[in-house]
Length: 79
Image 1 (cartoon, one colour):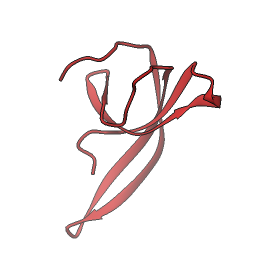
Image 2: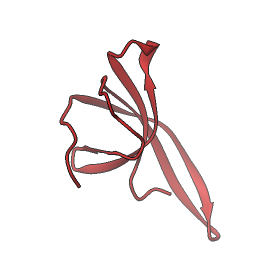
Image 3: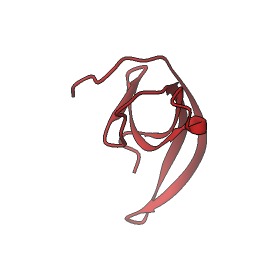
Image 4: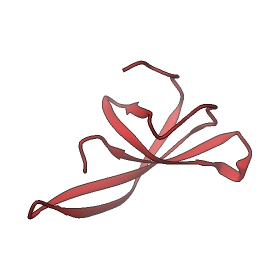
């Protein structure tokens, strides 16, 4: 995968739940990731943090001020 941009980030776990898949409960943890505003950021991109790859679930432009993004992310591989 190509690196789009290296930025400072803070990741905090926010929610953990279990999802039923094929008669099996799978644990899923979502986290909040805060980064500086990054023009062009999309949910098709991923976040690499401390050697772990996260999928971007949602992107919020905090206060629509173009200074900070608050992302909802989940560890890749969690379904």
